[in-house]
Image (cartoon, rainbow, N blue to C red; front, side, top):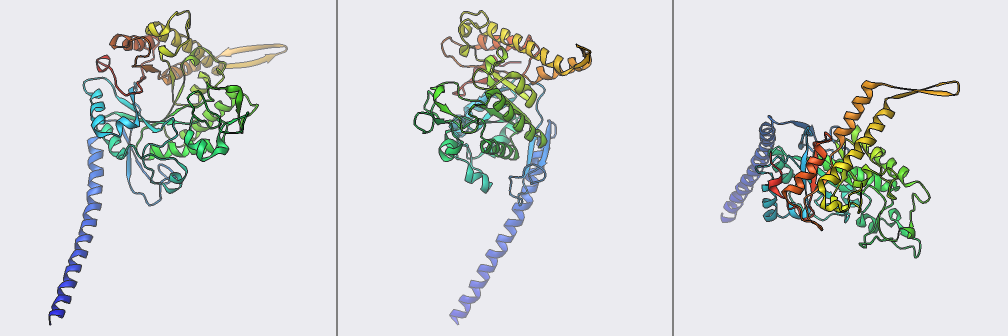
Length: 426
């Protein structure tokens, strides 16, 4: 009798548990829908676009069973952003201090490491195929929550991907890496870092996949950095498995064109970081970058115009670091000169009559192209001290140096992610 009663109550207990689980799953599903709608409604007064994160709508990388909705802010007309490292944004106590940079300022964008210059993807990846290829260090454990926080504040979120300086990929996939001519080992720069060859198509595809994944989880734009050949180290010792003997500008420009086209086809906004002195030098500087190629391939281009990094006597300035306004003003004077020539070339028609070639310029197209290229410029400026102390004045001097040329967007760099808040006022 006692055994029968025990069996009876045992069955009732497990049946109750079963009903509870069914009810909980149903509730969670409904709550997820309502949460999604609440999130959308909270953003309904801002410039948001919504994508269904499915293989056809957002990316081919996501699992086909995904039903999550992903929101993206439209690119602001004027971007005023700051960089934050994965270590800072991934540490809640430090992150909270960083968030305060946006209170009472005109900052409206943030740049977060997706894949940093060590080659590490800074958060977990749910796509099995990409996860098996990537090198992951889960520093930002709640990346979707971080993105959502910024979106609720109407802050545009840009994901930074270091491309060819990738020690992680160089070690895991040595066939992609630059080798030493002397011993055949992985070549290293002055910091002891290894690089992949800028001509390696597998690295191109890997970069594409990481970029698409970043956008699929909510990043509003993808930023590409280290899109070049190395600039220091024993360069004559480099053996380039994929681009040996090729023109470096052509190799890097081909990558620009490839990644820019792929992202455009998927409606993913893009930006590119290039050396600051490319505004004045179009030789490729031994690293393969030119301002012109970047402007033709990406939605936005960020020359890294840190006055402390310019050579002595740049544009006749004895100490560029101590002259932030003059350095930036003259750098972007040179950029506008190059853009003017690009726009004229785009608007020119060449007609050969006998031995003479006549050139006609479509003025409307010329003006339109010039305006377009100028709007693409989004300089990286410095909010850090290297040799000469930088504070509010020096930061605002740099900003004045670009706005006088009609360039209103910028990103600020500080490797420690600490910013001079009083410099960013309306």
